[in-house]
Length: 167
Image 1 (tube, one colour):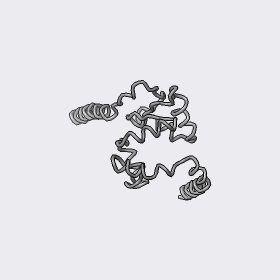
Image 2 (cartoon, one colour; image 1 turned 30 degrees about the vertical axis):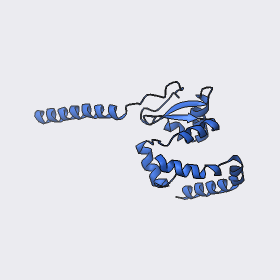
Image 3 (cartoon, rainbow, N blue to C red; image 1 turned 60 degrees about the vertical axis):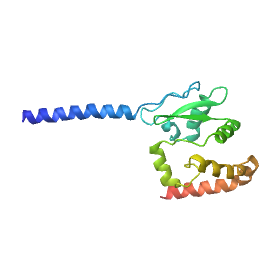
Image 4 (cartoon, rainbow, N blue to C red; image 1 turned 180 degrees about the horizontal axis):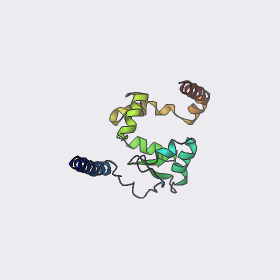
Protein backbone atom coordinates (compact mmCIF):
# COMPACT_ATOMS: atom_id res chain seq x y z
CA UNK A 1 0.00 0.00 0.00
CA UNK A 2 2.76 2.44 0.93
CA UNK A 3 4.81 1.66 -2.20
CA UNK A 4 1.75 2.25 -4.39
CA UNK A 5 1.17 5.58 -2.67
CA UNK A 6 4.83 6.58 -3.22
CA UNK A 7 4.65 5.51 -6.85
CA UNK A 8 1.45 7.52 -7.51
CA UNK A 9 2.90 10.52 -5.65
CA UNK A 10 6.12 10.47 -7.66
CA UNK A 11 4.18 10.16 -10.94
CA UNK A 12 2.05 13.14 -9.92
CA UNK A 13 5.13 15.21 -9.04
CA UNK A 14 6.89 14.39 -12.31
CA UNK A 15 3.80 15.06 -14.41
CA UNK A 16 3.19 18.34 -12.56
CA UNK A 17 6.79 19.43 -13.18
CA UNK A 18 6.66 18.48 -16.88
CA UNK A 19 3.22 20.04 -17.27
CA UNK A 20 4.35 23.34 -15.75
CA UNK A 21 7.46 23.41 -17.96
CA UNK A 22 5.36 22.81 -21.07
CA UNK A 23 2.77 25.37 -19.92
CA UNK A 24 5.42 28.06 -19.37
CA UNK A 25 6.89 27.43 -22.81
CA UNK A 26 3.44 27.50 -24.40
CA UNK A 27 2.49 30.68 -22.57
CA UNK A 28 5.76 32.44 -23.38
CA UNK A 29 4.75 36.02 -23.86
CA UNK A 30 6.29 37.55 -26.92
CA UNK A 31 7.80 40.98 -26.45
CA UNK A 32 5.57 43.96 -27.05
CA UNK A 33 6.10 46.27 -29.97
CA UNK A 34 8.90 48.64 -29.05
CA UNK A 35 7.93 52.25 -28.42
CA UNK A 36 4.18 51.60 -28.43
CA UNK A 37 2.23 51.80 -25.14
CA UNK A 38 0.98 48.48 -23.81
CA UNK A 39 -2.51 48.07 -22.43
CA UNK A 40 -2.35 46.79 -18.83
CA UNK A 41 -4.69 44.46 -16.98
CA UNK A 42 -4.34 41.40 -19.16
CA UNK A 43 -5.57 37.89 -18.39
CA UNK A 44 -2.77 35.39 -17.75
CA UNK A 45 -4.00 33.04 -20.50
CA UNK A 46 -6.23 35.04 -22.83
CA UNK A 47 -4.41 38.36 -22.84
CA UNK A 48 -6.85 41.19 -23.56
CA UNK A 49 -9.56 39.03 -25.16
CA UNK A 50 -11.79 39.31 -22.04
CA UNK A 51 -11.94 43.09 -22.54
CA UNK A 52 -13.28 42.55 -26.05
CA UNK A 53 -15.56 39.67 -25.09
CA UNK A 54 -17.24 41.53 -22.24
CA UNK A 55 -20.89 42.58 -22.25
CA UNK A 56 -20.03 45.93 -23.79
CA UNK A 57 -17.69 45.37 -26.73
CA UNK A 58 -17.45 49.10 -27.44
CA UNK A 59 -16.22 49.85 -23.91
CA UNK A 60 -13.60 47.08 -24.13
CA UNK A 61 -12.45 48.33 -27.50
CA UNK A 62 -12.34 51.91 -26.24
CA UNK A 63 -10.21 50.82 -23.29
CA UNK A 64 -7.74 49.06 -25.58
CA UNK A 65 -7.75 51.40 -28.56
CA UNK A 66 -8.37 54.87 -27.19
CA UNK A 67 -7.47 55.13 -23.52
CA UNK A 68 -3.99 53.65 -23.92
CA UNK A 69 -3.14 55.08 -27.34
CA UNK A 70 -0.17 57.41 -27.74
CA UNK A 71 -0.25 60.75 -29.59
CA UNK A 72 -0.08 58.86 -32.91
CA UNK A 73 -3.16 56.76 -32.04
CA UNK A 74 -1.19 53.52 -31.54
CA UNK A 75 -1.40 50.98 -28.72
CA UNK A 76 -0.33 47.38 -28.21
CA UNK A 77 -2.46 44.65 -26.65
CA UNK A 78 -2.21 40.88 -26.41
CA UNK A 79 -4.33 38.19 -28.05
CA UNK A 80 -3.36 35.28 -25.85
CA UNK A 81 0.43 35.61 -25.83
CA UNK A 82 0.88 37.42 -29.15
CA UNK A 83 1.19 41.20 -29.34
CA UNK A 84 -1.30 42.99 -31.59
CA UNK A 85 -1.06 46.52 -32.87
CA UNK A 86 -4.10 48.77 -32.55
CA UNK A 87 -4.20 51.64 -35.05
CA UNK A 88 -6.90 54.29 -34.63
CA UNK A 89 -6.18 56.69 -37.47
CA UNK A 90 -7.60 55.82 -40.87
CA UNK A 91 -4.64 57.07 -42.89
CA UNK A 92 -2.29 54.90 -40.79
CA UNK A 93 -4.50 51.84 -41.29
CA UNK A 94 -4.47 52.42 -45.04
CA UNK A 95 -0.68 52.76 -45.01
CA UNK A 96 -0.16 49.56 -43.00
CA UNK A 97 -2.60 47.52 -45.10
CA UNK A 98 -1.05 48.70 -48.35
CA UNK A 99 2.49 47.84 -47.20
CA UNK A 100 1.96 44.38 -45.74
CA UNK A 101 1.06 41.04 -47.30
CA UNK A 102 1.76 38.74 -44.36
CA UNK A 103 -0.48 38.71 -41.32
CA UNK A 104 -0.38 36.23 -38.47
CA UNK A 105 -3.50 34.99 -36.73
CA UNK A 106 -3.39 33.19 -33.43
CA UNK A 107 -3.92 29.45 -34.20
CA UNK A 108 -6.66 29.02 -31.58
CA UNK A 109 -8.59 32.03 -32.85
CA UNK A 110 -7.94 31.15 -36.49
CA UNK A 111 -9.50 27.72 -35.99
CA UNK A 112 -12.75 29.27 -34.80
CA UNK A 113 -12.71 32.03 -37.42
CA UNK A 114 -12.17 29.47 -40.20
CA UNK A 115 -15.17 27.47 -39.01
CA UNK A 116 -17.32 30.60 -38.98
CA UNK A 117 -16.08 32.45 -42.10
CA UNK A 118 -14.46 29.70 -44.17
CA UNK A 119 -10.99 29.71 -45.69
CA UNK A 120 -11.88 32.06 -48.56
CA UNK A 121 -12.87 35.02 -46.39
CA UNK A 122 -10.73 38.12 -46.81
CA UNK A 123 -10.24 38.27 -43.04
CA UNK A 124 -8.34 34.96 -42.95
CA UNK A 125 -6.46 35.16 -46.24
CA UNK A 126 -2.76 35.82 -46.22
CA UNK A 127 0.07 36.70 -48.54
CA UNK A 128 -0.30 37.73 -52.16
CA UNK A 129 -3.84 36.34 -52.47
CA UNK A 130 -4.97 38.62 -49.63
CA UNK A 131 -3.32 41.64 -51.25
CA UNK A 132 -4.95 40.84 -54.62
CA UNK A 133 -8.48 40.61 -53.20
CA UNK A 134 -7.97 43.55 -50.87
CA UNK A 135 -6.81 45.81 -53.71
CA UNK A 136 -9.82 44.72 -55.77
CA UNK A 137 -12.42 45.66 -53.13
CA UNK A 138 -10.80 48.50 -51.19
CA UNK A 139 -12.33 51.14 -53.48
CA UNK A 140 -15.78 49.97 -52.42
CA UNK A 141 -15.22 50.96 -48.79
CA UNK A 142 -15.27 54.72 -49.21
CA UNK A 143 -17.03 56.91 -46.67
CA UNK A 144 -19.85 57.73 -49.12
CA UNK A 145 -20.42 54.08 -50.10
CA UNK A 146 -20.57 52.98 -46.47
CA UNK A 147 -23.05 55.75 -45.63
CA UNK A 148 -25.33 54.61 -48.46
CA UNK A 149 -25.12 51.00 -47.23
CA UNK A 150 -25.63 51.75 -43.52
CA UNK A 151 -29.33 50.81 -43.46
CA UNK A 152 -28.59 47.49 -45.19
CA UNK A 153 -25.70 46.80 -42.81
CA UNK A 154 -27.99 47.50 -39.83
CA UNK A 155 -30.74 45.24 -41.21
CA UNK A 156 -28.33 42.34 -41.84
CA UNK A 157 -26.78 42.79 -38.37
CA UNK A 158 -30.20 42.65 -36.71
CA UNK A 159 -31.16 39.56 -38.73
CA UNK A 160 -27.92 37.85 -37.70
CA UNK A 161 -28.40 38.78 -34.04
CA UNK A 162 -32.00 37.50 -34.06
CA UNK A 163 -31.00 34.21 -35.65
CA UNK A 164 -28.21 33.71 -33.11
CA UNK A 165 -30.59 34.46 -30.24
CA UNK A 166 -33.12 31.92 -31.58
CA UNK A 167 -30.48 29.18 -31.56
